[in-house]
Image (cartoon, rainbow, N blue to C red; front, side):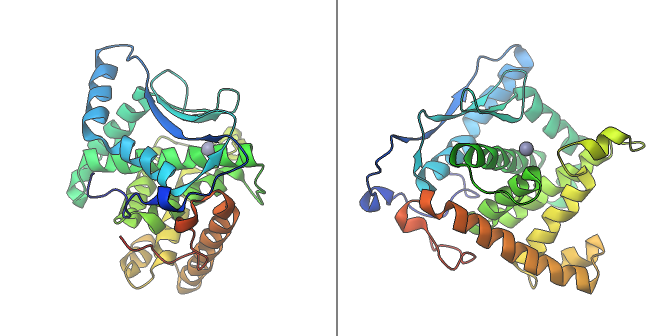
Length: 269
Ligand SMILES: [Zn+2]
């Protein structure tokens, strides 16, 4: 298993409580690559094994009663998105390529995180973001505020709470939002009409949550991002709120040995 991946051992079967609903799992599916470029990306993703680890993590953490398996399908033209008709999360190979190109063009390896690592970090964040849409739809979870912000919140919470280098992975994902924001030369009405917050807002919000999760460790982020003392204090409250809220809402869908009523304490390996 990749060193950045999941902390805990697979002992869920010992604690499994049978559900009255059909139990289904998340699955990773590789769609047929459409061309040589896509074939190259597919091969790399397969060889890294990291997406398998992420899907195994989801199955390890959650029990998901649903009519059919939740498929994370790599390939195709549409996405990233959750399709509620087919219960599929679609992530095109071209999206992965685009993410990698952005990190490469920005010489991201100079940050100490390789382009390949940053791409996997951002891809994992994307998978968790889409998982949030799926869980909200399937279980009719309450959402107070923008669903897109809530989905970013779950992605950050899962990374920070359950992955060894999760906060660093969330920082890579935040940096991708920053790079995407460079596409915008001037704002149009559509940017504000969009269901997503602006990329630059997603960048700052994600970093705010990373800071809020461990203010001592990420004090440097506060300085780098320019958060005032008051704003930084709010980040601590915001992260406490989103982590507590998400873990509370998902508690009924978590394997019993994985639930953590404290909400923000990392499970031990
Ligand atoms: Zn979304």
